[in-house]
Length: 173
Image (cartoon, rainbow, N blue to C red; front, side):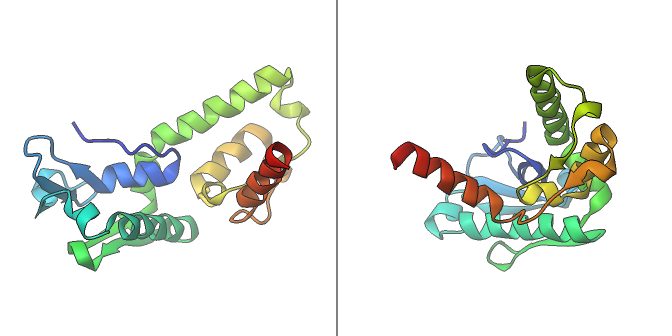
C-alpha cells in the first residue's frame, strides 16, 4: 500500500504518485515513474537518506516545480539529481493523480455554499487564491460550478501569507 503525504491539495496528489515507500522492505525507498508500475521503479537504499542527507525539502521543491510546470504547460519533469530522479510528467495523468484532492475541493466548496445557505448562482465573484488555484483542473472545477466569468484571482502565491499575517495580528496583536 503506498504511503500518502500528510499535506493536502494537488501537490500532495503528485507527491503520492511520484514517490512511494515500498512497505515490503522498510529499508528501500522506491521511486516509481508515474503510471509505470513496479517495473518502472528505481530503488534507493534507506529512506532515512532523505533525512540524513537533508533531501526532503529538495524533494518537496522538485515536486512543487513539477506542479508549477503542469499548471502552465502540458508536460513537466520531476527531477532531483541527488536521488537519480528524472521522471516525465503530463497534465492528463496529473489530473488523474489529483482526483481525490479535486473531489475534496468540490466537497469543501459545496459545504461552504450549504453553510452559507446560498447556491452557486447566487455567488457574484469567486476569488481563487493559493498556488493550487493556478492548477488548470482546479480552475475548471470552479468555472464549472460558478461560471468562468465569476472567477477572479490575484497575488495567488502571496495572498495566503498575507492572510496568515493578518490573522496573526488579530490573534496576537
